[in-house]
Length: 552
Image 1 (cartoon, rainbow, N blue to C red):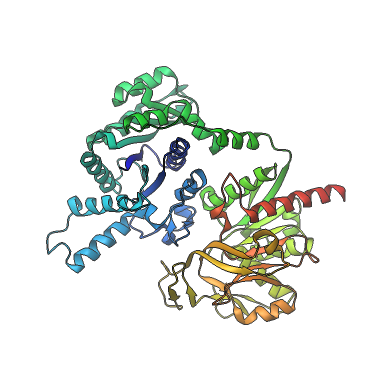
Image 2: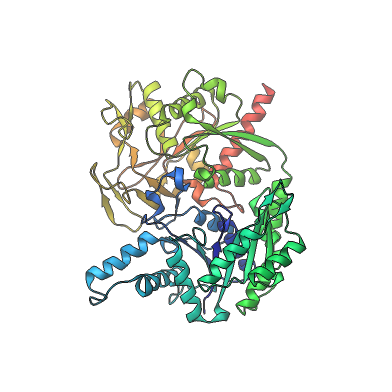
């Protein structure tokens, strides 16, 4: 029978519920349990893909084509189980499903209410995410509830898991509550009152936490732990410190050493072998003992928003570990760069990465960045929009196509080298069509798709004969310009078989040591254990560029 751990958060958001949930999952997995994670998001958007990066941060994409919350990226980086569409859902998705049932007549004309109809639907979605009733059913499902306790939006989720826990019985569910213990510098004290209040809110709706994870900038002293325990009705051994660390990969050991996994296994009556965290210790050792350092310029639009490039940042760090170097990432605002000052701003870097993004703002800065990297022979990796700007730059300055652009940024461009995809084959084999009037929400090319890689190319040395990566985009290299670009020297090293959509472009290695743009998002498949072949090769190229510069 599948057991459940419900993870809630209080006081403020961004405390690290995702990391805490993923770390607990990793420890339980190391005990030999089959674990999955489910994220419930309390907003009305049907999926995170319709949300602005300024509000939400990164949208993570799964193999089966779901646009999900960024926490699913942490889950995939921490555990072996791959995430699916069923591992993330929003309030919007729940209401959409309930209203479809009501329209069909499934409720036989009854009044449709939050309790029981919405709360029952939430429970059904949770069970689906845990694979109950299928061969994929897990031993433990960790359910992370977005938002903070006390928010009106997340109340239906909390009520649903309270009901679910009641129905399953006490040995089949556990509650972990993440809370904030602030240090007030003027008073020289840690304050426990916010934690007391947030637990009080939980208890008012009938949920008693089994564990409190106390986030602070330091370890919680014994006296404060005892005080929190008395005020919250949580045994002292269930009050666990989560202090700030310099790498997220230290969190599993931190939680294990305070007995979190043992406590959860006792509560859920799970008999398992002891925990083995050697792989995590090895990771931390690699992080703390680099043999060198490279500095990467990430030239993007959302550089002030740390969550916007979460997976890219982690993929670069993973590749650093594989190459035994520390990767320092400088986030450069593409709006601050133009052709005249690109050299002054970018010359000091060992390599340049241009990530994805939407909209016209900052695009010309990205084009100037691609030009600089191409002309100065600096290793360049373009992802999604980063591949498109490299194509536009090459079309303008090498292929002689003046004012070439994407129809996303200039609908009247004389040379639309990047244009709207009108038809593609989805991950599940269905043919999708769209035009300019289609809804923006939910009309992207999404999920894992494969294409053949041309022999004797940089891409082939990285991927071999076939590349299978995840996509999230609305625009694509225009097939009508591919021959002109090829004649001008651009290598199109991977195309989809059916539609001839461009997946990878690169420069010959006789012209440039390492210059590649990919339409897909490789960062979603990077793990700390192996890195990702593309990022591993990129950081290796950065190291070689640095060494060559020192010799020059």
